[in-house]
Image 1 (cartoon, rainbow, N blue to C red):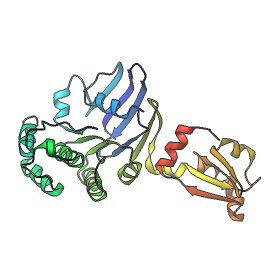
Image 2 (cartoon, rainbow, N blue to C red):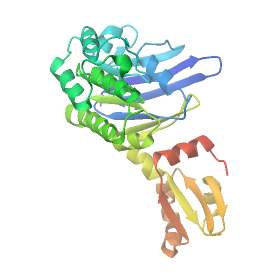
Image 3 (cartoon, rainbow, N blue to C red):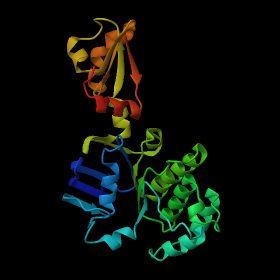
Image 4 (cartoon, rainbow, N blue to C red):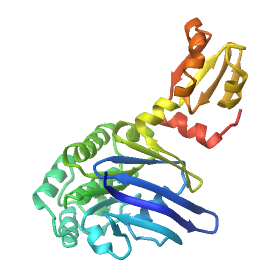
Length: 292
C-alpha cells in the first residue's frame, strides 16, 4: 500500500518542549487520528508537515515528495485547516474565497459556493464579524474547494455545534471512503476521532506512545473488574490504573486477547467482568501509566 504521508524521526526542540523522534505513516485513502493532551506536540507536528516551521531533524515525505523541496507542488494538493483560522477581518467571505482561489490550480468555484450555502455562511459578511464556529466552517470550505488529495486538519470541529460537527465528520468520511482521499486529523474531541478514523496515533509529551488501527486498539484495551483472588497475581500486577473498592477491584489491560483464555473461568463464574474502553479511557491510562 502506498503512503500519502511518511514521517521519520521528526525532532523539534523548544525551551520547554521537545518533539522527540516522531515517526508515523498515513496510507493512501485512510483517516489517521492524532490524539494527545494539550501541549503534546500535535500542532507542532502538523505545522512541520505544512512547512510552516522547520524541524531540527528528521524526514517528511508527502505524496512521495520531500516536504521542503516540493512545497508548492504539495500545497496545491493539500487542504489545511489550522487551529486558529486567520483571515483579513475587513474583507468579505466572497472576497476571501476569490483571493484564496489564486493559490490553487484546481479551485472549484461552484463547490465553494455550495459549501457556503451548506454551512450557512453569508457571502457578503466580513470575516472579522464571523463567530469562531463560522470561521472554522469557512476554513473547511476553503480547504475543500480545490479538491485536495490530502486533508490536514488541526482541531477542525472545535467551536462547532453538534449538528454541524456531525456533517463535517460525515463529509470527511465520504472523502476518504468514496473518493480515496487521505485525512490527517488532530482533535481533543476523541469521540470525533473514534467516529471516522481508521488509524490512531497517541502523542504524549512529544513522543508517539501508541500507533495502531482503531479496531485493533479497542480490541486490546479493556477494563477488567474482578473479585478478590479471582485473577492470577501476574495478571493483576500487569494492570494499569488499578483501583480497589468495597465491591471489588479493577484495572486496565492493553493486551486483552492474550489474557482472554486465562480469564475464561472467572468470566463464567462472573467473578471477572470485562468492560470496553473508549479512546478517552485509553489516553488517560497512557498518561497515568502504571499509577495505582
